[in-house]
Image 1 (cartoon, rainbow, N blue to C red):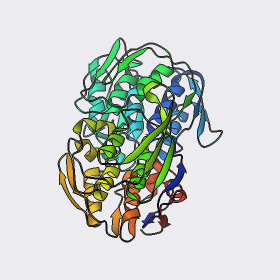
Image 2 (image 1 turned 135 degrees about the vertical axis):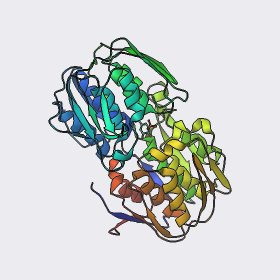
Image 3 (image 1 turned 60 degrees about the vertical axis):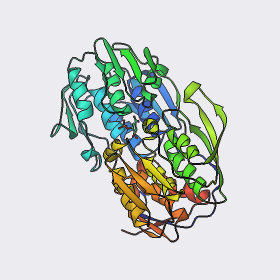
Length: 439
Ligand code: S3P
């Protein structure tokens, strides 16, 4: 890990100007994976040069895929075809990335060779049974610690069969692992979801020429086709833009434009929720393909009010809850979050991490098993731990902008997993986030 050990966030001025946040993490992972298995050379523009996505690129380099880096946000991937990967010589390190590990498990389950997937301390605590069980029903053989935790030991040379899967939880990672295993399975693989999740795997398979049918909450493909190299332009990550959407909403006098942000509806639940709370966010210059467009988002300060967050929007904003907690703390009145128990198995237990952090800043928060009740109020100075979670660290950097005194945030190096350069970019538009060596 690189980057500062801690941050000091306090009383920022209004946010102004234009900001371009880094490329989308979900899209960057998938672009490398499919380009590696395609026939021919693919160019990826706007790649997220974060630790998570670099780990995925390194995984394929370790399986014999040449990946050139002409600049930090570009990758040129020399695809080896569906059966062209070579056996990795050592365990594949997915770092902090649940997406990397779960999607790779699906892809590697049908390869000829054995492989082992390992992760960092946080990833080593995250549940994998959700992919192991359905993949096993397709014929895969994957062993995990206590049947659930990394490392994952994947046996090669298995014959996979397509199947219909209806996941019990809303998870794009589970859906994607099944679909990617389905590429190498005999027959049809179909996933039907109770709550639609992000559809980047489906869209990208289509872009690489794999026959696939899909719509909100369902996807169907057959094994045995090939992927044709293509060029991918990665949009700016809505989940990274989210920190600035909330910061500009809560700091008086702010007027900020976020450029070229991906606005796939399966990602932008926070936009709807912030608008319900009274936020002033205007979309302009929508461009790109259908639902998967990008747009510029102009956000101006507004007085937010607490709401009951509609449960139907939870899956569409699953990564945005840490920063929503901050918006709720800054709002007038009470905000209730429910139906979000998945937050307990992210990079940290995000319900507990946010509740404890906000309590340390004087905000009333009551945890529930699947959410929280947050009383808006005045934020005080205080000391926070990020729980080794990038989104917790960035959320409290935003909270610090309206706190009565300095907010000290420990353990911020993990921000490099998804948003290298966050603190510099935040400073460039008026936020006050300084690196400190606080341990
Ligand atoms: C992701 C899916 C979500 C999300 C994660 C990225 C993806 O995870 O939280 O950051 O790229 O498919 P779950 O599938 O566990 O909900």
